[in-house]
Image 1 (cartoon, rainbow, N blue to C red):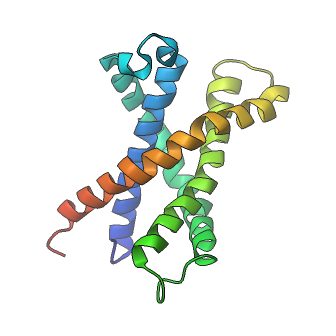
Image 2 (cartoon, rainbow, N blue to C red):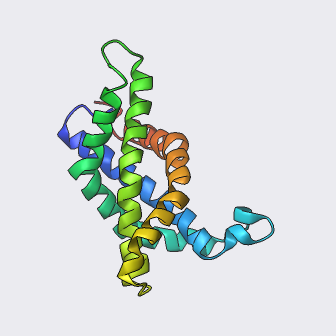
Amino acid sequence: MPKNKFQGFIFGIIMSYTMAYGMEVYNIAIKEGVNLTVGGLSNMTNAIFLDALKEAAYMGLFVILFSNLWGNRIGSAIASKHCNPGQDNPYICQLLRQAGTIAVMCPTMSLVASILFNIIFANAPLSQLPAIWIGTILKNFPMAFFWNMFAAAPFTHWLFGKVFQNE
């Protein structure tokens, strides 16, 4: 885990881009209808991963911005209501912080994606934004939760440990 602000910044970049990339792969696959084909998401193509890399390049910046403005703080506050790191298992406290952050960041990033991809790029009427946003949250929350808990966070911790192994 980060021991200073610089390490925290690097940890945040790794986590933000890992989350953005995973969510973009998922959303592009759905947008292209891969989930509706026989075999479902097993029919993804390399092009989906490349397109996701392009979108994650700028979506990761939004994740960094909003997680630093409020996502991490509110996620930590949610966890602190249910876990005391001095008394409780630190791993459980970490998982609760992750879950709290997901509970804040998924609606935040779903709103960003709804505005960007539906309203701006696809010219959907602004009056439909609330419905689009709720639909986007419903689609993204399960993936955001499981992607964070079982892929993004473990990968981020592993990579961060490799980068700062001597510190």
